[in-house]
Image (cartoon, rainbow, N blue to C red; front, side, top):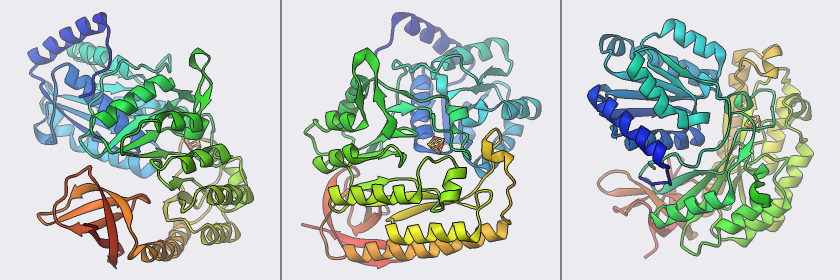
Length: 462
Ligand code: SF4
């Protein structure tokens, strides 16, 4: 567990809470995270808070005294899965009132969801905000003292608390948020409502955490934010931007790889591309969400760029960073998307040639501007478009993989697959399988030798 400085008052309070948890027989917690990497990062803090009061993490949900569900509100399907999960816990938490079920994250930032849980799931103990995790210990104590459902869904303040303890997953990758919230208000997206306004961490706090993670043996650092390109460190009159932050972090001379997510095309530009080009530690694969190739749809989405501007960004990056790759997100079936709009997306995808795409069917989110528009594309049409785009993208991805055969690539061992094989990740994030067991987190030079079932097979260069 990575320790951060905590003050004495907080320590006193934590000791009281720890005693109370023990006297209630609560000693283990299972945390289930839905959604994005930022949610995973929040869960590492939830785990850190629980460990700081004597609660041990467990992978066994059925045996855990405390179950924490960290939710996602980005798509309707994620919400449905969360409600299914909560529903499955009904019998257990209704019968065993001594156990504790806590629901946090983006879903419970929405008043209609809070009302629904309060009305239909009375066995839930705590609804908490991941925007204000410092309040979590207090909420737990309140719940233990009153036995009532306890809420903190809408924080009064969005201040960043650097004192929250953190318990990282023991993998090759450390997740480091550099900023929270978003000011962009894309019309389909609930993030600005559930995550609050954009706010950046102090670069000194980020640097400290970055260097500590490398010291702790993490080989890949993922910098997180809803729009990392609008990172602004304006604390104590320091005014560095994301490119400068990357420069500062990459002054660490160890062997590691830096990734970041997510970039907004309107804010990514030449200073960022030059910085990536200047540091071999920064991944040459940039995730730059496109969402649509149609200017009409981009405007309706409030994305603040045109397809031509997007392509200009790609070309700028390709001119500056040798061997740069792009991945992207596409939304299919946004309200009003015509066949011509969809064809414009296909055309841009063929022109850019992304390494890979995350393709989503449009999902109406309550409270967003797009939710007021008629969701007018029949579901079958959305599915057909999704399949058409997927097929085109699969061919492009395959072309990239074929071009790798016989080349030498740096890769991190990420998973011992079975008794005799190891999976590694290349810079473009694709997985390559090699024979033999290799320690997770070590870098190797690999040579892709074949593609089987769309996956790279290779060997480690001796
Ligand atoms: S940039 Fe747009 S899509 Fe991304 S989090 Fe902000 S509002 Fe949502």
